[in-house]
Figure 1 (cartoon, one colour):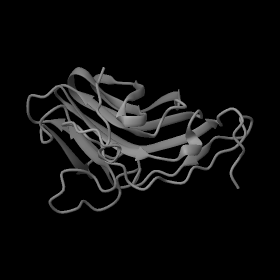
Figure 2 (cartoon, one colour; figure 1 turned 30 degrees about the horizontal axis):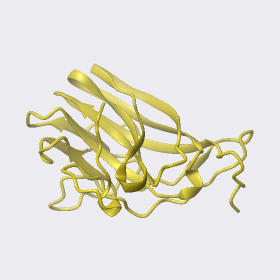
Figure 3 (tube, helix red, strand yellow; figure 1 turned 60 degrees about the vertical axis):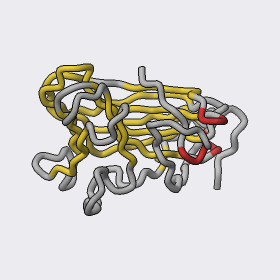
Figure 4 (cartoon, one colour; figure 1 turned 45 degrees about the horizontal axis):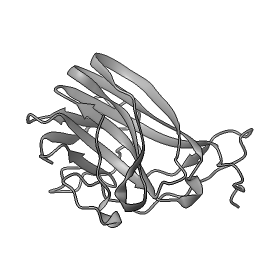
Length: 204
């Protein structure tokens, strides 16, 4: 399990910080309606890379202690959709790396969400990689954490996890994790609202 510190904006200082960007608007509905999407930024990694940046645009990349121990590369060789995917590859001996995006919408506290992405792996001899969720409470304390991983060498597959955002959440992150050697590709990230928090009205 990854022990995550707070985001920089929450005033907790630590080596690993995943910075919050502007939150995408949440489109939610009643529990008996089809899932509605929360807008992620650059979910398919189609945006052009930023020169000099080691991460995909609109995402935050980090690692256990050495931020450059994992490479995050826009890859056009074999995406699952569109023209590009993102490749995560360990290049120095650190146990894990992350690529995340922060969501700060208070209307999602207590809601049940589904996060999914396409994942494939090559030579992932550790735990592997896959979708990731981490919730920060007041003062940066961890209040929620979920992840799913696959290892070995696999073709593209849709990996999904469902979770309820803790009521104490100030900001949460979704993205992908990789544990250990090898390569993990991710593409077509999607965040959906399955159920509103009890007592929450559907926003207009």
